[in-house]
Length: 427
Ligand code: GDP
Ligand code: IMO
Ligand code: MG
View: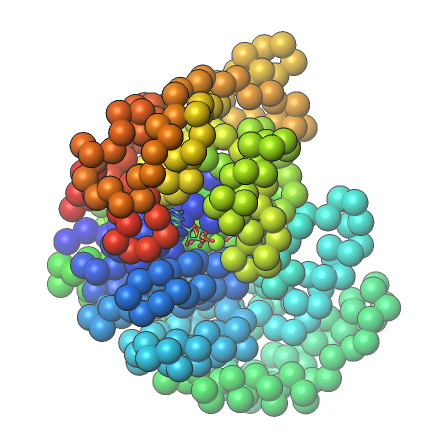
């Protein structure tokens, strides 16, 4: 049986939560593989509306085991809050497991995220301030504390003493902030450890076992391809890889076991935080989309920047991820627009280019070249069959498929699970 990776195709918030909740119906395992609680995945199903930051979007099915993979940075306070909320709302979380290799977000990571952003002034990256960047920095710098460390109190205390010495020096000497107390942090994290202990596992064996039994394994990405540290708009990016390749690393599964790589693209583009976005609409159409689609961050509430579908970026995303299929979400948001634009190339210093530049200075100067298509100007949220979509909507989707070099399997016409059209089944 296959393993499917679900990846954000642009700058995040494409509707990965909705698509994973939908696909998880057939899955034995759903593994979140990257990011931390900078992510906000909205799921609306028969149990209600949920905004998940760490817990995989497959948690609503009794037959699905959910794993927070080694590639995720875990803030235990946020995780416990999310577990409690799900329990209160009647969702069984006994099948939730956390990789013992996942790194912990510590209180100094959250403080440093804020202090670093403040020190950047006008050049701030617009991070979510959740401490995710500093936690991944420490992972690479070999200064991290991992979820598994919560299970060995003596080792945790020793590690914390060593690291907090270093962090307190930065907090006090570089930023003039108050130091953190080893005892307080230690006691707090011991409590988290006690609560999370039944859920902490070596998880790669679980993934391997499910795959070998022929069960469907679903890997849930966070963020989006253009926020990747290597392939995104560096330095305006996140700190772990949202790519399909990141899925293998962050879930502990071999690339040879992945059979499908599914992009989630919005029918237009959004971005939250700073950095270049060639198709951003700073005028009334952008505002109209934002209001109509309520484009405000799931995690931070910040207004999302809205713009036309960037097919240059989408094609690049297809190439570096190797998308085998896609879900197009929020097609219904475009219902009212008389004409639609798709960015098919960029103008860079009087030259027409069809690639996504690696330098943000170049990308900043890129002017979108648009192709225009007619809108359909009728409501599509109640349509469930592809051939019942208005002709203009089918033409729009067909053009996205062609320009993004990726076949579309799923079209989402509303936020609820059932507001979905299966154009071509993935499996
Ligand atoms: P994620 O981070 O990729 O999971 O996406 P978010 O949850 O942050 O943002 C996607 C938003 O779009 C959420 O508010 C969803 O409820 C909503 N959504 C998803 N699919 C559709 C759709 O097809 N139509 C509409 N109108 N809303 C959708
Ligand atoms: P989901 O999974 C959209 C953005 C932030 C900022 C940059 C760096 O919901 O799609 P960070 O806190 O990661 O250091 O911030 O990345 N960002 C997201 N934007 N959706 C997300 O997640 C994001 N996670 C991080 O806004 O620009
Ligand atoms: Mg989101």
